[in-house]
Length: 239
Image 1: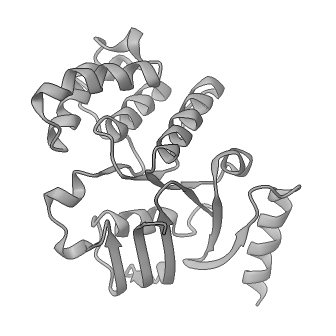
Image 2: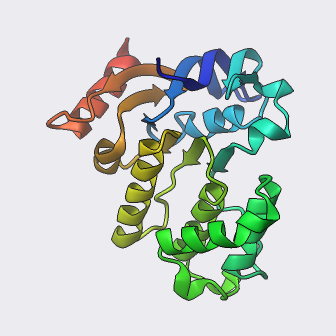
């Protein structure tokens, strides 16, 4: 039986202007990549923030690793890795130190930190920047450091909002391989993106969000995923 690591049931959150998400139901299972795709402003980042407790759902429930998000403690969040909107890094510190802090903040034992940092630096091809202050890095390499911080502690659940932002083609391939490796080891991955071709390469399931609502799914193996996406969004807009 497949374990469900993330479950949203009838979740709603509206900002003062009326935008947000409405009645969203979604889950992520162990060993899979579940992609969330939508146009800018569709509600992807809001949904990610609700999953991580950065916003509290006004309706419905969000469960992470079996715990309701409002009641989830440090033991739950220690098993979650995330990047939402911007990489969370300390610009004056180098890549290694940023990753050491991320590992310790997620509860990794002190003795395990050096090996974990070394492994993720190699995995994301950051060795050459290990001792460079993050503020001196390009946007793409800063993004890689942020992604490495989400991966360093070996999370059971990954929540990544537009993770390929600023990455060059080599970085996109490196990230793709890292996510598939994690899913192959049993982690669950929720990833939002507007890069449909890239999503199709890694996703087991693809859900479409438009104007804050889940409006359909796409077949990752479909022949013309871009056409199917726009058809789904158009149908929802005219329904």
